[in-house]
Length: 402
Ligand code: 2P0
Image (cartoon, helix red, strand yellow):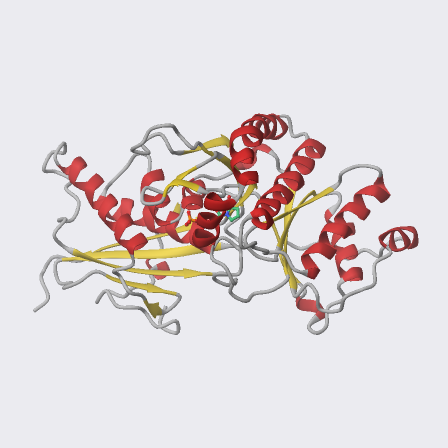
């Protein structure tokens, strides 16, 4: 029989982040401690986000988790690590709290449902948004406050950077217990309003080599990765911080491209080698360099994660012309009107001299579509009960009923 005690139900959303100084490699696999610090830009949730509902009730007999409508195996070690860590923090808080506002009992089971509004495992950092959202939502449900880096990080390293909006540094820390391996804001969402982001979706397929396994092999075999972590990243982080604080786009853009290239070089230096870029990715790299050369300055930057999709940074005065250059180089095969999603970009025609300067044989359909977005805020609590992904019975709401 159902108890009189209503379930605690909380729904939150969390953003995707894109690293401009990349994380690749762990010094501690279990605690998810990185071999170098990293720095990222948080993308706007209007275009890319994870939404998560957590429900805690005396009536639930087991922990259950759904992702994009599919029930997951709750015994997955990453999921278990997050749940255990949040319950540990909740227990710690409980012992110091008065009886007035006690969170739900720690012996109650939790149901969690999560969904992304973008393709999972397409190299768009869905695990970062997903685990940041899980950590944030569970923290609200269990009444835990304070730094959630450890909870998110135990799910996926890069997830701790999605706990903040704007520009974020994940400091690697030096302690063996990882307590100082935390994400910290560098500048808020409002700091650089002219900065714009385009995601060029090359392939929405699942990647061949997951990040966790890939970086493990890199740590074991790549001398370049060791050199990068020790001798390159510390200087680059300081320089990137300066570029962001001074809104120095050329400096920011060049460093972003160099760091992406070095990350992919460490992948090739891994043995057996890992390659995440494909022919279209390399054509996008050429396109960006030719576009910049034509203008005589760095107006656009690319960065690539563990997949072939490009993330482009530019300023609002250049977005329209660069989108026209992408359309010219990768003519949409079908649904030309659906080629651009997200923030509107005014259509412009490409000047003939720029077409000549690009001098690339067009690849029809090479870029499937573009998501146009900008820098955005950190996780949010969604107060509207209609946002809940779980019904009052703690089971997945059907989309039609939601
Ligand atoms: C990053 N990536 O800094 C780098 C750049 C991909 C390339 O963080 O094993 O999913 O869960 O800690 O965070 C992807 O790795 O790996 C990643 P785990 P994660 O964004």
